[in-house]
Length: 534
Image: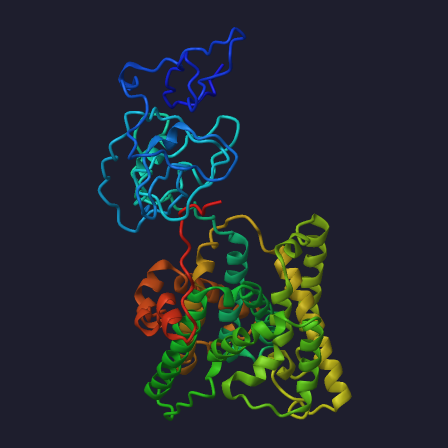
């Protein structure tokens, strides 16, 4: 049982009953008072039990609590801020930015036995010195801001105690400045990479079939591919762009991997056409041939915040798509393609991973196979009788020589057909890792570079062989297109052309810290890791 009596030395009582002597304790019932509490040898009172008359004990605050042993320290005339006072512990002070050499403790009063103060004693304001003693935490409650915790900064005077507390089971001390282990990188899902490679192979095949369009088989294959391959590509682009504006690196790609490659490819194709004997033409605002996709994707990316804030974005996008057929929209900056394929991009923004999981059941894949086969049959049947302009998703009703009500019907039918075939393709593409999964990560190079081979083949007449204008020729061209897509998606191709098609323009952008400092907004306040006093 602990003793609660004061640690002050109490003078022995006088038997003569003199007035003014403070009793040492309660009487034992026989008129006598007990002897003073024994003191250790080094703290026994001297012959003069009381201090000289010119010194007096400091008056405790009016707290109703008895003075404790901590109060045996004499109080100076004017107490400095942060001193350990006679009436309790100082408030916790946060660690200074730069550690200081620990100062030796002040000489202890011989009468101070180190008894802690009363719990209800008030604490004075002002910081305490770094060497001030701290109370040890009780065993029945957690650490608080007044005690040593492992989250102190390196400059804290308790850093040593925190390091001991964090010592691993092996006994080795942890370095104070050791960085935390980086989180494990999440494995890339192969499914969307598989989809992208299948689609880019269709893009190459579609462009390669153009010189043989006089054949029924080539026109049917071309019509079937163009009905859904670019709508599916735009849909995947929308799905991958859902969090586009949440990342500075992705925003930078608007310039690095879209605008800069667009200008490079425009100039490159102009030089190639001029080298092949054609007239020199270069119009940056009117994209040449396949280059329209980069410019349209920039506009879709910029419009993403608008669609994510709407209540019914898909309905609005479909209405815009249908109404756009009434106007002769210019092809400058790919505005015609922007409106023509807008519903697919907005649909991609709305998709979530669980929506793709709906395509996993076997019966869905069987139905998807039937849909693809039916689409191919419809293309074979309609190819000799229809114009191919509707499959480009860019021409107005007037340009297609249709009345407005027929144009609305055709535009709506193309929207349904493209969506059905895109969903069927997404269901049929394998989800596991395949031999072409890695190739699907570099489809940008196949998209931008295959046009060079196709232009040269058309100009040199490599596709004018008669047997290529038939079913076997279509199979041969499509097989060659897949082989070309494989070559252009190899890592070696990216290594050779990355400096041109994916330049790292780090010098062009400000760092986030610089943007906060010069953008008119005050920099965000830095959070301190030091505990806050409670």
